[in-house]
Image (cartoon, rainbow over all chains, first blue to last red; front, side):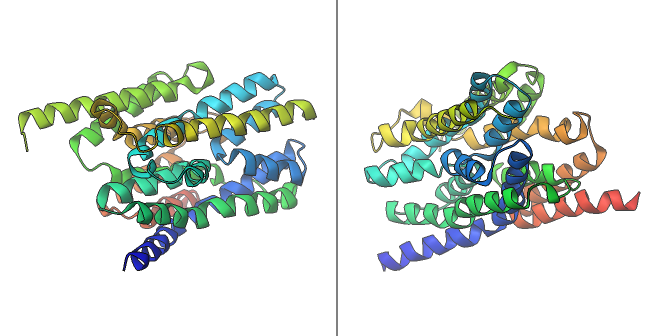
Length: 236
Length: 107
């Protein structure tokens, strides 16, 4: 019975992540193309995707290097974009923290925007055992993590022969907006998102993507405060 | 042409750094319970980081030279509205893609 539930969790993960495969494919290929145009060969582009496995930061790093920015500026800018991963890691800890040490290493490596978003929704909405949670996470990795490598290579091979078609750049915002919608379950969630957006826009002028950090922390504090006020008013 | 030393410095540095971020809490805190106030803030990580990440991309898309683009804005609005009311990620993404590709054809 337990084994069956674990299997079911894995396949639910695979199925629920399938829509994101549609997003990952053009995004990964785009990285391959951009990397090739910046002068990277197929091996370098693939290594980038395997070692870093974080799209937005990879684009930033390659872009800055191609623009002639110093290596440390490219590195720090790209790293600040990935600071959010630490928040994802913390957010997943109550659910995946009890996993065996090596499993945690692999789970951490695959902590991406999409895997985090899906796992977060699943873990908050269902009561699952640790094994089911791990199986679900590995299930989502299959259509999201693995194609990231394959289509980076494909993009790098096809390289310059692809015209940068209209709107491909917008695949990421579309995918994230689609994920945010169902997350806005309570007033606290909505206000958190609202404050995060306003602050991120107000502080977009800050260097090194610090506007993202201001927005993120502002949103989290707002959500926590609203939750506190709501529970105080109506103790359950 | 990108300098090869600089490239490998960035690839390895970014890879190691990103892994440290991802592993930080999950790996080191493990099954020890986190304090309530921290958990309360962490519940709002997703709804804060993701909107903050994309808000500037939606309003000032780099592919449009940082200028607001009505087509991208409309696509974003449709995606979000569909995602919020229908709570269906795939339908929302398809709706947004349809607007993004279809709207310029109407001009």
